[in-house]
Length: 122
Image (cartoon, rainbow, N blue to C red):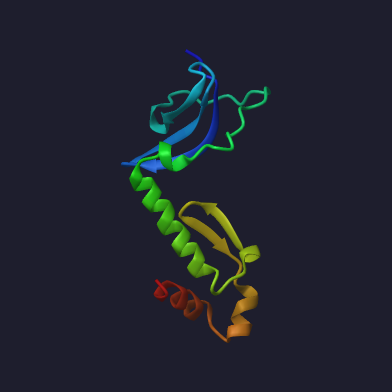
């Protein structure tokens, strides 16, 4: 059976990844557990359903995910005390890449000292 699904978010909940988005078959927002997708998805040329402006991922994801997102924001705000947002590249909800090259000379820190300073801020 073929499902046409427009993905909005990828969320982690209770040890599984879920894709949250719009299901054309059900004409509604739904979720698919990623480990249950057995065939490689095909990317279609047709336009995808846009994320509704009033869509709130916290109402779809479990409260655990809302807490996870809150903690992620708190950690990101710690990064901002040391690194400009333009030098922080968000990879996923719990991973970032930071270009700290210019900060080392300014702070007179080694890489290790700057990283340990950021880690201890929590």
